[in-house]
Amino acid sequence: MPGLDRKVVVHHLSVKKGARPVKQGQRRFQPELILLIETEVNKLIEVGFIREVKYPIWISSIIPVRKKNGQIRVCVDFRDLNNACPKDDFPLPIAELMIDATTSHEALSFMDGSSRYNQIRMAPADEELTAFRTPKGIYCYRVMPFGLKNAGAIYQRAMQRIFDDMLHKNVECYVDDLVVKSKKREDHLYDLRKVFECLRRYQLKMNPSKCAFGVTSGKFLGFIVRQWGIEIEQAKIDAILRMPEPQNIHELKILQGKLAYLRRFILNLAGRCQPFGPLMKKDVPFEWDEACDKAFKSIKSYFMKPPVLVAPVHGRPLILYVVAQERSVGILLAQKNDEEKENALYYLSRTMTPNELKYSPIEKLCLALIFVIQKLKYYFQSHSIHQAIKGQVLADFLADHPMHAEWELSDNLPDEDVLVIEITPPWKMECMCQKIVTAPIKQLFEVRQVVDALIKEMATYMMDTSPLESHLKIFFDEASNYARTKLKSSWKVTREVYEESLSVAKDDIFAAEAK
Image (tube, rainbow, N blue to C red):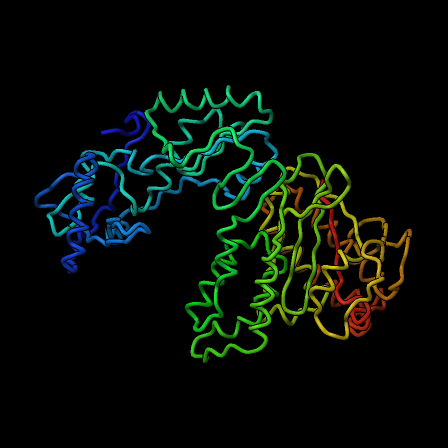
């Protein structure tokens, strides 16, 4: 029976002390389905993955799943056994960072593990714990099966040990998905040779039909990675474009699940899906109104020409656009390329809670800053942060997402230097405006000074060695108190003046750069 070297990994089941064994009942199947199940069981016996067992303490049931080719995959319901086992907290890699790390390489090779988890052997003493009932008899696994609680963590630990000196250099590995990458094409053969030596040494097998060698692009973790960027797989785009209008909450959840998987690529996802929110509530009739239909068509239209994202280049400044809209906050992480043009790295957004909707505009901006730091802090950990303000993000972004009809922007509104402010610290509310390059919206400059100070203070917290979460709370509390008091007394800016300025500018958008 092929499999990974036992010196590398063997799967032990650590059943909790005192856990009560469970024997699941026999399930009934149609006669034609029984024949397909027995055929699949015979295949597993022939390759040595399972063996017959008598008098097991734990017995699980099977769930036959039909494949696209009409055959049957025998899945085992290990829920009771999984509940009796502790969780293995071995960390899985952050998929988004792995995808970023795969771009900007001239040569790529994609490989997929053969039989996936079945390459890892079960500990002999724990084999009978995986016993399952079939129409043909009771069997147990000799290899690690699909469905066990810690199977993914066990596999990732094995890959970490096998490719330890190559990971994040010329190899990226997420469970059984493997990518060999080379900055220069002439180095790729050498990198592949090193990987194949490890595969032979530890008896790890790859599936030839799912491998591609020496290519410039390929599918990795559900996305297409290329030397110049990251794209959505066309099959996922087509799945959304072909979706009919949802007729019930179940179909709406399917749509939102597909969108959530692609959220990094979707500009203002929370705002686009806002009309769907009331339909997701319990005991609410599912009524697909005009607003929902407009939002659904807007999403489909967006995927007619989806964006291509790029990975951040180390040592080059990152640009963070933050916008606080009426019911949602949105973020765009960008970076300038060699031609000084901005490329999108990450789109992020979320809706506000009922309590957050009561925040003042300045508090909503603070909320947006905290949100992006919490979600994307791994992008900033290797950067020092400095502050810069841009008046308005790209005009086409604003025109595409009007909050109110009367707040539409004219086509000739400058998209960059609406207002640029340089101020002197510190945070203690004494910042002075040193230079205003252009200020067509004069009512906003006091508020912009405040947010400038908020961003600088956030940068101080980010560089501190204390826990980030505690600083976030302190930052938000101080910012909220300042917005309620100092804005009205020292700066003479009231909520009414601020909202009046919004009728001209539509959204107050700030950009913080990170080096």
